Amino acid sequence: MKFLFTGLIKSNIFISLAAAVLAFGTQVQLGFAPHFHPYIWLIFFAALFEYNLHRLVTVLTNKAALNSVKHRWVKDYPYVFYFLVLVSVAGFATTLLYAKIEVLISLIPAAVLTIFYSVPVFKFSDRLYRLREIPFIKIFLIAFVWSVVTIILPVIESGYNGSLANLSFVLAERYDFILVITIPLDITEMEQDKRYNLKIIPIVYRVNKSYKISNAALVIFILICLIHYISNDELFILLAMIVSGISTLAILNSKTLRTHFYYHYGWLDGTMLAQGMLICLSYYIFY
Image (cartoon, rainbow, N blue to C red; front, side, top):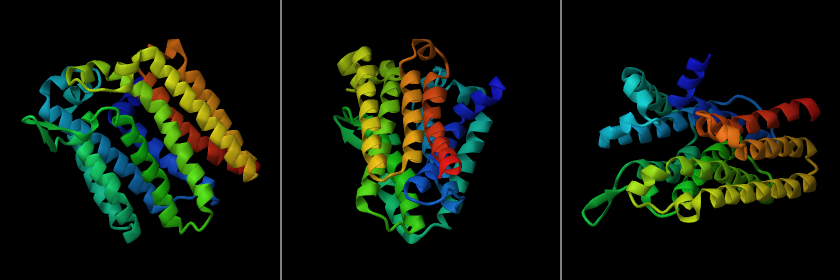
């Protein structure tokens, strides 16, 4: 079981599932019943493609990275990794064929940012830089792309004609929540980022203050949810979000879990999966 779970995390299948399940939660937040739609596959394969593209670029441009904890799985299972890259490309390309033209247009900004995030394209002082190497921008880019993919796609595909205020609240909640769980991820990449002289929150503000910033963002997330779902009289969604927020708070501040191998790529990434599941579960139980 541990081998299977490790494989799901290392292959980026786990986080891709989290993106797909978050999209089911978005359906409920937009006023629809959770239901399967081909764009769910599009979101899954888009996430799988992006994360494996980033890893592929890393291992091709920096062979030493294969010895790191994060990328050693690629070294141990190279054929599985390259097969997954092919599957993610094929799956993403296939699902694009079934998407509305509006969806394709909406994906362009996220796709451009994703490519520039992973691929060195900016030249400065005779060196090529990736977008993620711009000071402080990394976590905000991640939050933006996740919000676009898991919210805007369901909005367009569903023909959402609800209020702009409701949509704005959903976007703010998703963006803030992704920031909460991405700040600790920066902590794990501090040593690597120091080598490139990158300015990220943990390096500039230190680890303890970084966790405080993450906690503050989580409090803001809960406050936004309280205002949003009480005013909309959607207490069943509020319940799911409160449970999601409290459980994330516990995971975020658990010193025991912080030392665990699965803390960032299992527990914290799993909070996205849990949030989508909680919203759908609350819908079927209480609505």
